[in-house]
Image (cartoon, rainbow, N blue to C red; front, side, top):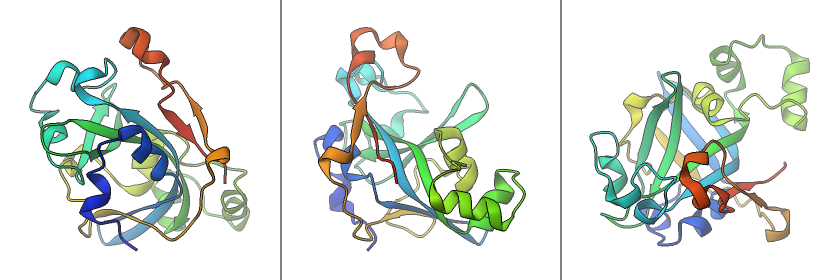
Length: 201
């Protein structure tokens, strides 16, 4: 069920971004178990990708974890507010990463709602389960919902704090919507790459 190390060592960051759709992202933080189905991802192709923090092999204290073997987390702060969670992929010294942009919460909903500062009610739960209400529909709200912060950067994704499971949810290629990434206009032509992937469930 839990994805093993080999899954993250794929050399094709675009393919792995698609493969992560429909997988279940789990956290056990402060003793609270929460999870959501991954519904949106973005691929970042390291040294050759002008939108990547590691473009041109840029190594800093923040980005160094991107150069590790795949299967660890890269969490950074955006605009000084939002904690954004990325899955590091590929082999050591190839700094590929996949940003998890959205999830559909499926476990620990009461905890998730508390973290999102949304009042718990049967109606809200019904709307979440039906897909009518998206309470983790952006990368900043994903981490808020699951309790992930920058202090969790470098976490082993085969461990018991943050991990991803395959529960057999089949995603058809025709159901994946591809488009350009969000908020990377600085990347010039690379901003137009169709490296953002979405499913509606």
